[in-house]
Image 1 (tube, one colour):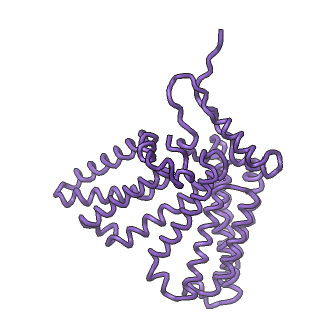
Image 2: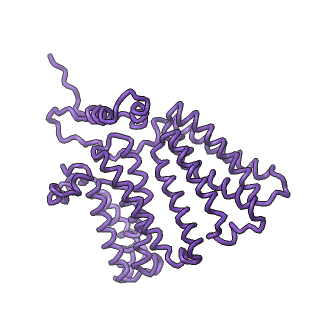
Length: 371
C-alpha cells in the first residue's frame, strides 16, 4: 500500500543561509535559485490549489521564542549602556562630544553583538534589531564627533543644512554599508538607503538653504520613487520570491510606500486633519491606485501606508452625510476591515484578473507570474 504525502509545500530554505552558501562558493547563484525553487515546488495530490511562496510574501522575524527572548535582552542591554554612558559622562563635556562618546560606545556594542547573533548564530529578529539600530547610532556618533571637534557653537542644532553634517553623514553611510556587507541582513539595504536620503537632504540644504523645508513633499516623493525603483530591481531578479533579493525588495517597498503616500497627499490635499469632501475623494482614488500597484507587483506591504488615510477619507464622507460620530466610526472600521479581508482572501484571483491584459508586456517580466 502506498502512503500518500500531504500536498503542503515544505518550509522554504533560509535565503540568508542560501546567500551565504553562494558567498562561500558552495553553490553558484543559478544553482541556489534552482534549489530554492525546487524546494518550495508543491507536490500535487488533487486536494486543491496550493499557495506559492511568492503569494505568501513571508516575513522572517523569528524562528521561535528564543529569538524574541534574545531580542529583549539586546534592547535592555543597549538601553542600559546608553543611559549609563550619558549619566556617567564628564559633566563639562559639550553635548556633541558626549553624544559622540555615548553613541560610539553603543555602536561598538551593536557591532560586537552582531558578530554573535547575526553572523554566527543567524538569529532573525536579533539580527533585524541590531541592523536597524547600527546605522543611526553610528551616524549620531559621527555627527557628534564632527560638531564637537569643529564647532562648539552647536551649529548642528541651529541649522539642519550645516556643511559640518556632510562628512559625518558620508561616514555614517560607509558604516551602515560596512555593517550590511559584513552581516548580510536584508533590512540593512533599506537602512543604508534611508541614510543616503538624509545625505541628499543635507546637500540640498547646503546648496539652497530653506529649499528643503519649502519643498519637503517633492523631496520625500523623489526619495520614495527612488526606493521603489530599487525595490523593483531586486524583485525583478527574484520573481519567484525564493532568494534573499526578495527580502531586500520587501524592506525597500516598506520604506518607499509611506514616503510616496504622504508626499502625494501633502501635494494634493489640505492635510489629513482638514479633509473636505473633495480631498476625501482624492484620497480614495489614490488608495485605489496604490492597491492596483500593490496587486500588480504582488506586495501587500505597499497598501499598509495608505490604510489610515483611506479610513480618514471614509470617515470624512460619513461626516459630510450627517452621520453621527459613533456610527461613522463603526461604519468606517467595518468597511475598512471588509476591504482588507476581501482583498487579502481573493488576492490571487484579483491578480489573475488584473494581470490578464499585462501578461505579454514588459512589466510582466518584472513581477511574479499572474497565475
